[in-house]
Length: 343
Image 1 (tube, rainbow, N blue to C red):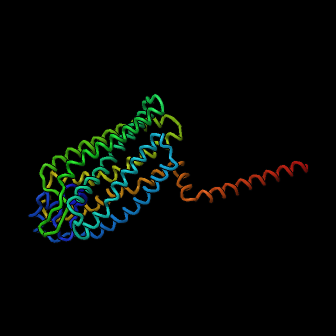
Image 2: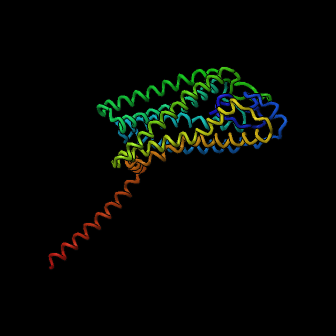
Image 3: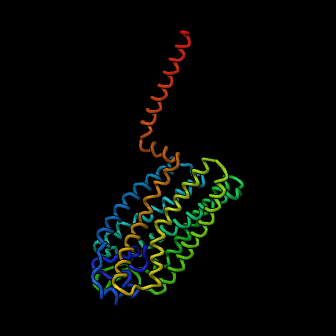
């Protein structure tokens, strides 16, 4: 989710102007080096694979939550909104894959809209993960919710606030994004506005690192409290949410740190420049893979698995197995009764 080149990618595609050259003035370094490894085809293939897995998994999860999930449960409400956030982010991937393989063909309005959707998906995920962590902190550590209804209403308020903040934070950068041409005359989606750099740093500080600090603090307190009790149901929920939160920061952390580091430091030789080029592409693919791993963690919930099996009509097999095992137990009990009567 890079801001200054294509809204997505810092990769070097089709000999076009790169993020590094376009924004950070790497001209002297790049033009004195050999052509770096071309990741455009590899990255585009990963984009499509991630898109297919994410859309399939998150759509199934969304359907299960809407049809079978208890949306009067605060955790399910957060999961529903996180699923929507992943879908908003994932639907953009085919468009960026096309740009990687060719050039920007979706016009100026498409550039603004897709860039906005990128940041809405990213920022809403961070804020929602922070909100669900704070919710569990209040529930487990403070035990302050006066009632289940109040907790659900607060969760709904948190979710609405997350979307509003994400949209507002994305608008300013999206407006500055535009269809333009690079030095090779190819169309790209990007911006050369110097104010965008400052806005990006400010937003990443407030909407990535601050939530990270809050989440670490809350989960240290939550884990300390949970280890003192043996409520398996509550422990399972805490573990599921912890996995979801950890997956987000493990996937997005390296790419975010790498992008911010490039803001302050320019490579001064070809070896470092090419190494960073490879690292940035690997970190990018890792970051984007986040939107297709969340459904796997949601399946840690026994209720979610049961509802998904019901939706996929796998519950017939499960019922047959239960009936078979039940009949076996009944027949064994009958044999015992017959044996006792004969005695």
